[in-house]
Length: 261
Image 1 (cartoon, one colour):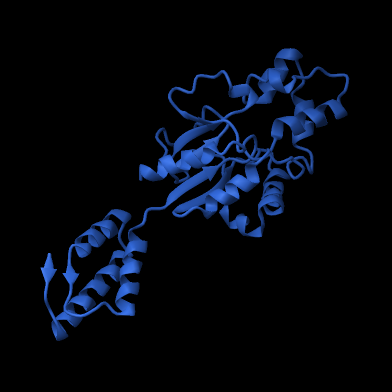
Image 2 (cartoon, helix red, strand yellow):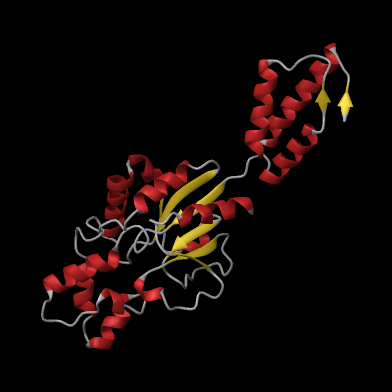
């Protein structure tokens, strides 16, 4: 609607609008958006908008903008756990059987290795629980650049969400060291380590584990499966799949989620 006003009336309405914006900061996004939509229907045309008025309108738009929160797993999605493990395993135990990368069939490698020979679990753990193992994981091609670019997209916030080993002596510290080395120190504040990813809030979780279980049966995020050797033939039951970081398909994936906010 159009309202022709001037003087003190205009000042009173401007003050009211300003107070609404401040108060809306304590409300949820829907409330902020409702306020923004209601205010956008009012056009005050008695005088040209001042610079401060324009700044106020921009602040309302900023408050109303939705953010997309993306959670990205580390091992198997950004860092190549399987390739690194296989190299270390064959180096340390050359006489023991191994599973070639293209033959991997299970998320937990212990499950598959135990089918080759009984009693391998202690030796397997002695490889990936060793000091330096996680810090030395090689990055998956294109992962670091893609995640950095994703975080620079308008309205997108990216966080690393990874599960440390139950034997956490080295893995916790080294995961942070890996993030700092490959993504930068600022990303330490964007790193979440948890044994239960279902309790972490977000819109998307990009993870190579097809079956993520935890305290919540219906987490806030939608699971996007990152393709790995062991999940290529698994039934995703309708879940989206991201095959790699190099062909640019992740951009369309993010834009699709943004359109649905």
